[in-house]
Image 1 (cartoon, rainbow, N blue to C red):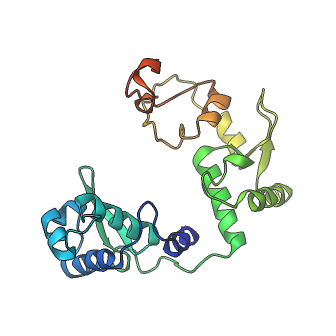
Image 2: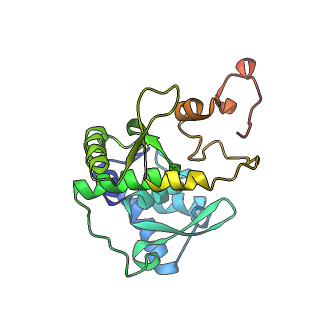
Image 3: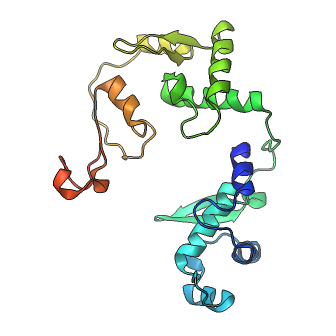
Length: 226
């Protein structure tokens, strides 16, 4: 989102300090040559261009810089080749009719609520705007207003104390819900399962990605899919 891009631009870097020289080099290359992947930036040439300083301009350095520029909104992902992202300038990749004006705070909070509930079907207040800082109070206030206006409904889930929020159309969809039992294999990072507490509260399913768990404490294995 635009507010998130502004936060990233105002910071010194997401995981590494921003380096103006490396940023300029990456943007100049993409501007002149068109969409590029991180592997298109030769490691040896990077060291030659910047000098072999204590940080060392390795392939990972350019990867972090490209991602930083993506998070700032300077670059967009124009495609993929295998696991590699193909980056291009936002001004070339973004359609001209997209509204890029900065939303005000009220518009931004409404966007978060509508986006998240549309994606998940129903959510508690604390599950909306996941990992977005300093938004809880505004989200709670806007939820009350949207319920009073009939834009959202509150739902009680058996065994859960806090209410869930959904669009009124969610109840209509329940009437036409297929009862067929089907299996779906998900990524451990899928939005449906990324909030582990929510997953357990709604489905009674406790899941841990055990590649981050010491070997002697694993119950399933190094990499299991939910």
